[in-house]
Every structure is written in C-alpha cells, then in structure tokens.
Length: 151
Image 1: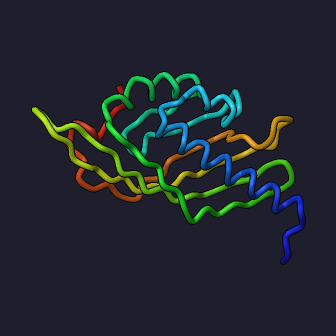
Image 2 (image 1 turned 30 degrees about the vertical axis):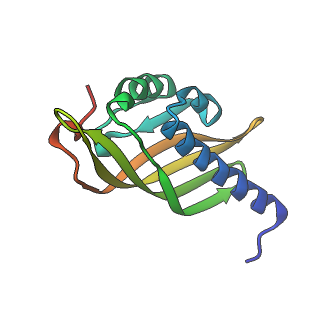
C-alpha cells in the first residue's frame, strides 16, 4: 500500500529520532535524552549487562559507565517501523563497536550486536521514545570485566 504524506513524515521523524539517540550516546551528550525520550520513559539495557530505569536513572548510569570506553559507534540499520496514529513501534538493528582499554596500556575493540525494540508516541514536540528495550544478538571480544555494568 502506498504511503501518504503523514506516514512519510512520521517515518522520517522517527528515523531521525533513532539516529539522534545513537549520536547522543556516542557524543556522551546524555542531556539530549530529554528531547529523545518521554519524561516517563522506561529504558532497559539488561540484555547486555546494563540496568533498567527511568530517563534520569539511565542518564546517571551512562555518565558513570561510558567513560570506561574510548571511542564508540552505534550503527543502526534495518529499522522496521509500524505507525498506528499517534503511537508507533520500531525494531532496529544496531552494530556497536566499542574501544576498551587493556590493563597496562593499549586498547581492543569489542563488538556488540543488538536490536532496539521501541514504543514511541507523538507528542506536541514531535515523536519521542516511551519505551526502549535492548535485545541481545551477539558480542565478540568483550573482556569479562565489561560483561556487566549493572552496579
């Protein structure tokens, strides 16, 4: 079925929002989450050893754990989006290489593969993520000390 202008606009806005999230994490600009998530959003990183919490809890958590990593990239693709009026669901693949410091000196690259499973809502300020759950696909070259950051 052909998309109308509203659906095209919704899909572009949602895609940009998904990119904004990845850019915010990689730039360690967690204050940007306030314009990406609804104030009451639930974010669940437990599938990859993280925490589950509110936007405020996740911002604090990321500010604490992300300095353990050097460069990071959250590369997203194959985003499936289902728009139903003022709500939407999305399932987006993410390939996430992260630079990890080695004991002593040097670094290595670890890889995480996951999907973001999102519930989104249209607000007066545009689309926002109301719930994000990570689904694990794989990891590679991840040292044991980096397998859980849920403290």
